[in-house]
Each structure stands twice: as C-alpha cells, then as structure tokens.
Image (cartoon, rainbow, N blue to C red; front, top):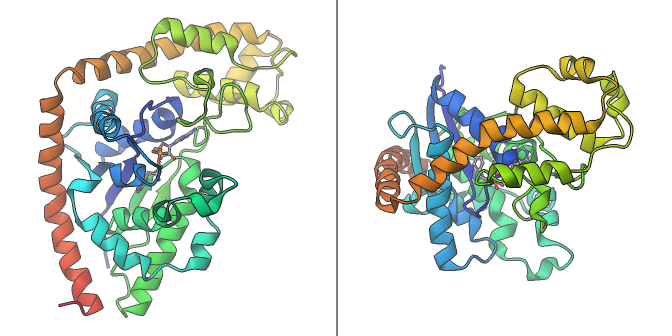
Length: 334
Ligand code: TYM
C-alpha cells in the first residue's frame, strides 16, 4: 500500500522562540514545505498543561504564528493553524488516552523534568501531554514529523499508540507509523550558560539563549558572555568530547555557515574562542535579526495573523473531520 507523505509538526506558544527552535525545527519546516504536504500547528492546548495567563497566551499564539511566517513558512503552501480551533485534536486525544498505557507514560522523561520534584502538583494534562501529541500527528495520518531530539521519545510513543490502535481495532496500516525527522548535528542546541542543558524557553537566564527577537546588540552581548573553554580550539572533534559549551558554539557556527564541523575545526585549530565568537556573532546577526524584525513587523497587524490562522483552521478541519469520522467508525462509536 502506498501511503501519502504528510508532514506534521507543532510548536508551543510559550513565548521567546529561540535559536534551538529555529535550527532544530523551524528551518527544517521551511525546507520540507517545498517537497511535501505540510501541516504546522501552534499547539496552544499543549501550552496550557502549565498555567498560562490568558492575555499572554493570546499574544503568544499570534507571536508564534508570526515566527512561522517570518522564518519562511508560506500559508499558501503549508497549513498553518492553532490546535484548539480544530476540535478533532481534543477528541482524538481522549480516544488515544484509552489506547495508551500508564506504563508507557511513566517512562516519559520530559514529564519528569517538567513536573519537577513535586509530581503530585503537576496537572493531569502535563502527564498525558504525549497522548495529545500523538493525536496531533495521527489526526492527519502524518507520516513524517520534523522535531528536535528532545521530542524523540514522544515520537516513539506516538508510534506505539498507532501500532496498538491498528492492532486493537484490527485495521493494519490504518494509522501510518510516523517517522521522526531529526537533523543530525543540530538536533539539540545547548544552553549558552551550561552545555549539558538544552537551550530552552523556560531557563531563567535570558543569557542562556538567543531569542529570535534579539537585537544585534543583545546577540553580541550573549555570545561574548557565553561559556566556551580556556584552551584554544583543538584540531580534532574528539578533543571536544568533554567540552560541551565549546562544541555547541562550533556546531551552531557550522550550521549557520553550512560548513562541516570538521572543516570549521581544521580552519580554526589553535585559535582562541574569542575568534570563533566574533565570527559566530556576525553569522547570527545576519541570520537572526532579519527574522526578528519580520516578527515585529507582522505583529503590528494582528488581524492579518488571525486571518491566516482562520484559513489554516478551515483547511485542517476538512482533513481532521474526515479522519475522525473513520476513527469513530473503527471504534464502533455511533
Ligand atoms: P516545543 O514547543 O518545546 O519546541 C518546538 C520545536 O523546537 C525543537 N527544540 C529544539 N531543537 C533543538 N535544540 C533545542 N534546544 C530545542 N528546543 C526545542 C523541539 O524539539 C520542537 O521540534 N511537544 C512539542 C510540540 C508538539 C509537537 C506535536 C511536535 C505538540 N504536538 C506534534 C511534533 C508533533 C514541544 O513542546 O515542542
């Protein structure tokens, strides 16, 4: 059986999209839109698994939409919409809550990280969040899911849920098993302050990340302050094994300049990290500040952003309703 290739991915509207989101996910979204049918979603229902102030959430949904457009997503090519406006996501999530197993969810490391030490106080939504993610993907029978490495475990769970549904309801291949598309070298951009932690919206210090809306001056200051290494740049990648901050800066530079890490290291061997930092600052300013300016410009016309979401919702709903109808039939719902 030939399965139609469909790409689905989501980004949480929790403010401050950063270089990790950009290199690990958004840039790949844009490349894929040239080759396949793509659906990109602002996952507002995922965001509320941790309390969000309503007015800030509202603004962040629009800002994430603006970030999609500013990085190059084209609403005439890709379906761009917000999750809560297509009710099939919540409906399928409930059905999948009944397919997914508690033992599977108990293994999710992101829940453990996000819930912190007092798990009893975490929302139930945060715990079953990966089931909603599976629903997002399976609602459109997506075959490919571009994400950063931090989402790999959730993707594996989505595959397990799809497989169990197909088996339980005796419908082999009904849900295709979604393939994660994880870029090799930059699937995990690390914090600028601690190379063992991923760059994240939730880390307290703004110096830990480059935000898409940062000005040239802010980028300059953040890279100057970024942790690197007191030794000079080594001539071999394996000598960076225990130097995660240095490896992170070099990997980001390699990605931005589209040169292999080997080539960068050979060229810079023996130089101080201040040399790399100056070059990296320049490359970041060239790549990121135009995106930030475009986000700010797009945010001046919120009704335009809402119109784009509305149009995307209409398109997504057509696909979702058809699939939900078939899913309900498979289960025996009337
Ligand atoms: P979110 O909103 O945390 O992140 C959006 C995307 O950015 C990637 N990412 C990174 N990539 C590299 N380095 C980093 N430091 C980094 N930080 C974030 C994430 O891997 C992600 O691809 N649960 C998802 C959203 C979601 C989703 C989905 C994704 C909901 N439903 C269905 C795919 C399919 C999340 O919280 O991503």
